[in-house]
Amino acid sequence: MGLPHPVPGGATGGAAPAAADRALRVLVVEDDPVIAHLIEHVLTRKGFVVDVAPDGRLAQAMLTETPPAVIVLDVMLPFVGGFELLARIRETPRWAHVPILMLTSKANENYVVRAFGAGVSDYVTKPFRPEELVVRVRRLARG
Image (tube, rainbow, N blue to C red; front, side, top):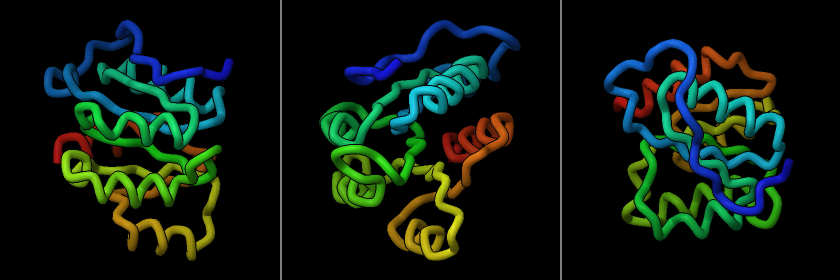
């Protein structure tokens, strides 16, 4: 189920999304296709438009495009790691302001401190609770 390129989100299903969420785009950078699909499904169901980049190199190539409202970023990624991608995002003027939620299995305090020091807006460890992730993404998207 690996994705060869960023994939825009699908149709909205389930409960009607809040009006403020309808146009909000989220970039999910996650190499595990099962987790990426789960995040895409949960966020799309809540009315977000979701793009998925299965590795850091593809996400990095997107830095020339219009920035999303929020980025959900894994740490352990092929080609360009999460921390390196985070640094490049923060160095890119059009993307530097975008809130980033780091979603990773790295629960060690050193990773958390390093992530916040590098500029993430929120940090969630795997396994995660899908509805909590939605609330956190919505909070970041609304500023």
